[in-house]
Image (cartoon, rainbow, N blue to C red; front, side, top):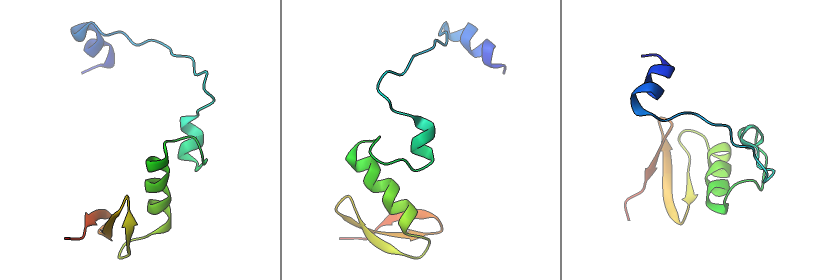
Amino acid sequence: MLLHDIYDETGVKPYIVLRRDNISGTAIRKGAQGMTMPKVTEVLNFLTTFKDGHSGILLGKKVNIINNRLEVVDD
């Protein structure tokens, strides 16, 4: 299905939103700090620091990274 067909069927039309808050999605993806909420920053830092097979504390929970997935350790 073509993108314009989705818009035609739903009646939703795309529109441009000008950013005025100096937040950049591209900068966040490249690792810029201080542009997201504190919990998002904590998760991003955790994911860049720990690799497969490691464990650590994330948002107050002990988690393991197994097969590139976060698993909460049973309490």
